Length: 353
Image (tube, rainbow, N blue to C red; front, side, top):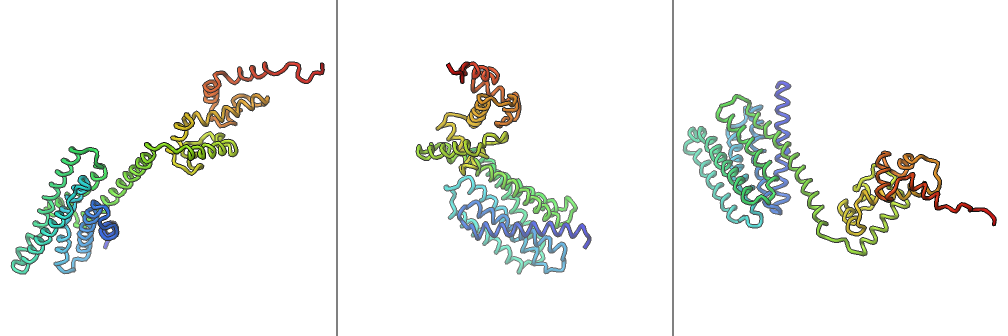
C-alpha cells in the first residue's frame, strides 16, 4: 500500500469511526430526548457503516461478497432518516412519532423481502440490488430537499440554520456516491468515504459554531425580560463600588464589560442591565466617571503631573479621549478646572491677624 493510499485509508476510516461513535451516542445514549437527534444519529450510523465497509472492501478485496451488500442495506435507511430528521426538526411537538415508526417498519419489511429474493434470483439480485438502494436514496433525497424548502419558506422562525448544514452535507455525500456508482467519474470507491469524512468534520464545525451562537442568544434573552430584584441590585451595586474603590479596576485602560462582569461573577448582560436600569448609566460613562473623579482629585491636590499624564494614570489610553471625556463630564477643561480650584482657595490662608 503506497503512502497516498495509506493516507486515504486513514482519513476515510477515522471519519467513519467518529461518525459511528457519534451516531451510537445520539441513538442509544440520548435516545429520544430530542427526536431530531435520534434521526441524525441514524443518518450518521448508516453512512458510517457504508463508508467503513467501502474502505475495507477497497483495501481488502478478499472479503466475502455479502459484506458490500450489508453496507448497501445500511444505506437504505439514510434517505428516510434525513427526511424524518427535517420533518421532526420543523414540526417539533407536532411530529407524529408513532406513524414514523410504522413507516420504518414497512421500510424494514421491504428491505427484508428484497433480501430474500437473493435466494431465488442470486445473479439478478446481485446486479440490481445496488440500483434499488440508490434509487430509494435518490427518492428520499429529493423529498428531503423539498420538505426543507417548504418548511423553511412557511415558517422562517424555526431553527432552519441548524438543519441546512445537515441537508447540504447529505446531498454532497449522495452526489459523490451517485457519480461513482454510475461511472460518470473515475475515482476510487474510497473517495466517497473521504468525502464523508471531510463533510462530517466541516459539518461538526458549522453546527458547533451555530450552537455557541444559540447558547449566547439564549443566555442574553434569559435576562432580557427580567428586572433584577431591588435587594439583589443593591448587593450588586455595593460589590461594584468596592471593586472600583478598593481595587481601582477603572485604571485598566483595556477594561471591558465582560472583564468587570467576570470579577463580579455575573453575566455581562446582567451587569449591563444593572448599570442601565439601576444606575441609569452605560458602562463607559460609569467607568469614566471614576477616572475623571480621580483626575479631579489629583488636580485639586496640586499634582506635578501634566494633564495628559494624569489622564494616562487614571486609565485613559489617549490624551484626546481624556480631554473630551473631562469636558463631557465636568463641562469644562482640565486647565479651567484647575484655575477655578486655585481661585476658590483662601488668599490669606495661614496668616495671623
